[in-house]
Image (cartoon, rainbow, N blue to C red):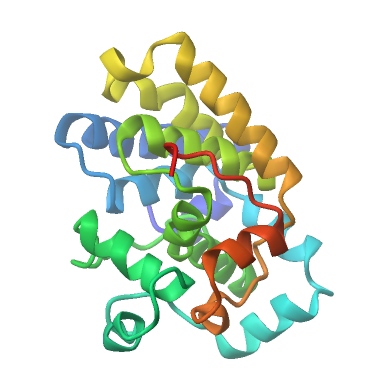
Length: 231
């Protein structure tokens, strides 16, 4: 079913289509531990309309308007890795590069086309939120295990409501039940959710212009609590 056809389906058929789309992508993720393109497909299915609302809510924000004009992308082809490597330790750019290298995240990803049509602003909002995901890892200190990724989704849910975070928090623990289906997960998620609510909204931040800033100063500026392992 193409995006245009999906848009024209009756509500119940659209819901069935989205449910099938999400289940196929989610089961592939669980079976193959593929946390890239298939998780993006899950988000496409569960967050139809979410980023339309988010884009509308920040339409008058000067930071968002600048992002829309310049459309920066955080991809392997667009990031100056050498420039990040030359920044001092402790800066956002240097620590972001360290995070990407340490967790083998420099191979890049290609996400499938979204079958659910959205406005140009909403589509970029979703792309921007996805591509700055690792900035939030650096600021919060959260690592990349299944447990940690679920915790970061709780932080992101505290920033703004999105069904992908809810879906990940409910289904993610079954990817690693021994580590995640424990009371500690509930405590960590609550702590992260509260930290996300208390932090200043970060969606419209032009992070590329802050690479040379110390992470400690950015945490203070945006009121981001460290919720990772003890530093």
